[in-house]
Length: 67
Image (cartoon, rainbow, N blue to C red):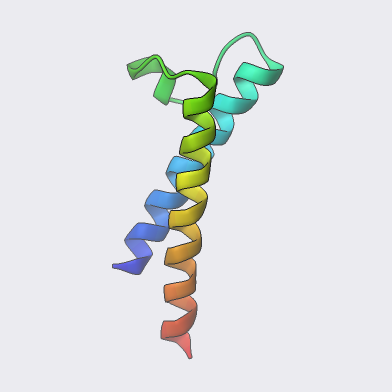
């Protein structure tokens, strides 16, 4: 189960990072999220943070399972 949480975290984090980077450095957000929803810049930052937390949680669980 932790592997699935880690994968979801990585995907959400990457989409948040792409959207945030596109808003800050490009003409508009990058990635797939902007194709379905109109997310503000702060929303992409939240997606990045939530994805990082989920990925960290999942990776820690996998590391504990290896021990």
